[in-house]
Structure formats: structure tokens, C-alpha cells
Length: 179
Image: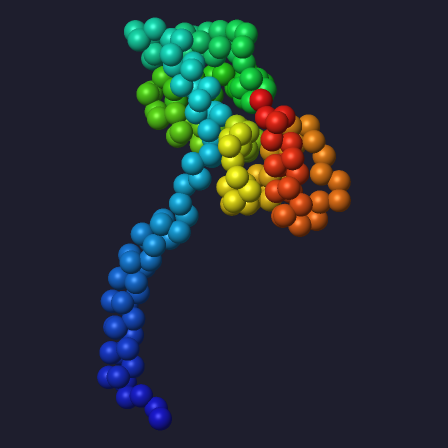
């Protein structure tokens, strides 16, 4: 059956009112669905926090001091492989790191801004640690990607591993190799 002009105008008006309301309700749901990964940019944030600790309080707004702090951190000894990799990424773009840093921007936001220029900055993650007392049940809760990373960090190949249970078994067999 055909709608009368009054009914079609009513439907159009109804849609114009309901559409923005539906959109406003959907935005918070979309934000909740995209929960932040706690390991995203973790090495970058840790390095920036360490650099922040090396800079005098009165020099935290000074770009050359921040760049010198980055140099001091990266050229100092005792850095792990992930920190060295982060320094490798940050060295050429010290000015880009120092500028938002000098504005007291939160470290996670600085890293996300740097990610726009170089995706690899936030891809560097610390190794997944498995406790020595970890049971098979604990290790089974990990994703296959995490299991592969653990084995790779230990320098162990898992030839013939096809199923998750194969990777779990190999991680448990090589638990003594954890540093």
C-alpha cells in the first residue's frame, strides 16, 4: 500500500531525529569495542620515561636538553635489545621526539604521534615472560603468536609444531632456558 504524503513526511522527520540519536549512542560503544592494548608502544613509553628521568626539571622544556637526554640514554650501557632497537628508531628523529616531549605531552601520546611517521615504533614489545612455576594451564592461556615469540626469544625452533598444543609442549620443555 502507498503512503500518504503526510505519512512519508512523518517517516522522514522521524529518521532525521532518530539518526543523530543512534549515532551518539553508537560512538561510546565503538570506543569500548576498541579497547587499548596494554602492550602497545610499551617499549617506546619505557624509553621516554627513562629519558625523562635523565633530564633536569628546569630543562624539560628545552629541545637541545631533551635531545641530549636521548643521546645520553641511547649511548649509555646496559640497554636491552628492545631498548637498543627503540634508540635505533629514535636517533634520526630526535627533534620530532623532543618537540611534543617539551610540551609535556603524555609519553603514550608522544609514541602514538611518532607511530604516524614510523609504524615500527609501537611494534617493538617486551618479551612475554613465563614464570618458572607456570603450569601447562597457564601456558595454554597464551595465544600461539605469544608462544612463538617466547620460543623465538629463547632461540628455540619448533619444527613440526602445527597445533597450539605442540607449541605449549615446547614452551614447557624449554622453560629452563628463560633468562
